[in-house]
Amino acid sequence: MKFSEVKEVGVQGVSVPSNKCQDNNCPYHGTLRVRGMIDEGLLVKYRARNMGVVEREYLYYNSKYKRYEKRRSKIHAHIPPCLDVKEGDRVIIGETRQLAKSISFVVLGKR
Image (tube, rainbow, N blue to C red):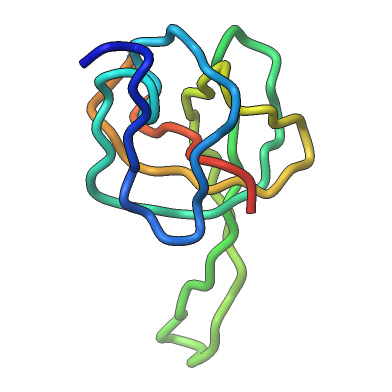
C-alpha cells in the first residue's frame, strides 16, 4: 500500500483525517489493522512521542452488595501524527497488534 492512499478503518462515527502522515503505524495511511475492542475515553497524557494515556470509565456489578460501582482504567495508545488531538479530548481507541511493551491500542479520532 502506498502512503498516498487513504483507507477506511471500518468504525462507525469516525471520519478519515484530512491531514496526511508517513507513519507506518497509522490505521489510515499505514499498514496497521484495527481488530478487537473499540472503546472511548479521555486523553489524560500526551507527552511521549506519538503515545498517550487514555482513561476509560466503566461500571462494575458488585454481586455482594447488588449494585454497580464506577471503576476506571488507563490504557496506553499510539497516536498517529495526522490526528490533531490534545489532552482533555474524548477519543475513540481501537485494539491492534502489540506495538510496544505496553501499547496495543491506537487512537482513531475525536468523539
